[in-house]
Length: 173
Picture 1 (cartoon, rainbow, N blue to C red):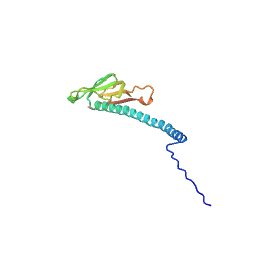
Picture 2: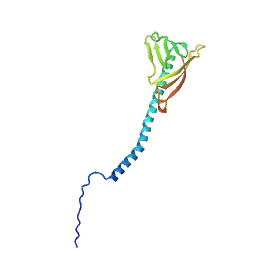
Picture 3: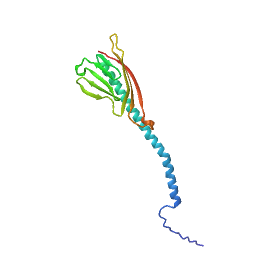
Picture 4: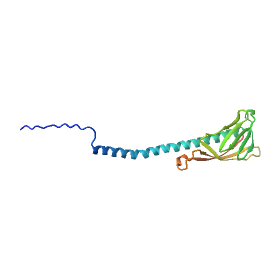
């Protein structure tokens, strides 16, 4: 006995409704797990960027202060708004650090004739304090300031960063 089978060809183009629902469900499950992970990675990157900006600006500012103090011959003024250093080099005499409106600027004799901001516009300094511990042949200065970012978000913690800096330096001249 010979059996004959009739092969039916169907022209099925596209997806059935069940297949479409399954694909949509699989894609939505994958996206629901990947999107929070991606957002956490992005927010972590933002937080690291803000921290690096504040830390690098605070380090630069403190190192610049120390260098200028060590290169000076005397401390003439030291208070909450100004640090003035006398220098034997006439092009740098006097070197003045000024604090106003959350910004620290430097003016140095004829080498820097106008005030130059010492930190980026993304950071601010508040408060600034300078104490002069000079005496008995030494000119020792202690400087304290808080460096913080200028991002105004109150709801997103990753945009809020501040760093307290305190150091002392002595003139070498």
